[in-house]
Length: 80
Image (cartoon, rainbow, N blue to C red; front, side, top):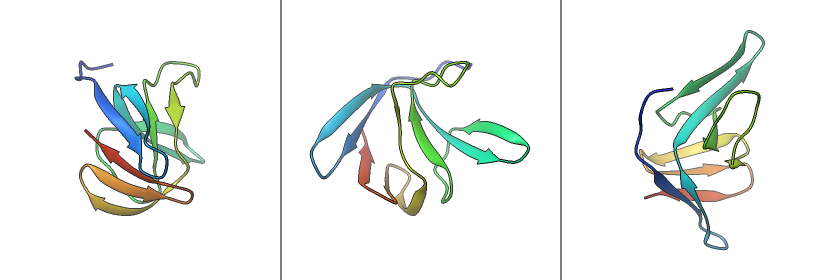
């Protein structure tokens, strides 16, 4: 996996934070693929590793507010 600086993902409702490498995952019938950009329909994953290991995984992104802020089915997140 490429080198990427640690960032902080913060859930706005309760200010719970997750520190690490942030990627976005797309689940589909052809498999799962990681991306560096936010897109509706993907989920955000903190510290993704092989074998579905991670620190945090959000539900599906339903709204992209900016390249550092988005909403999921359940929550509102910001990346710092």
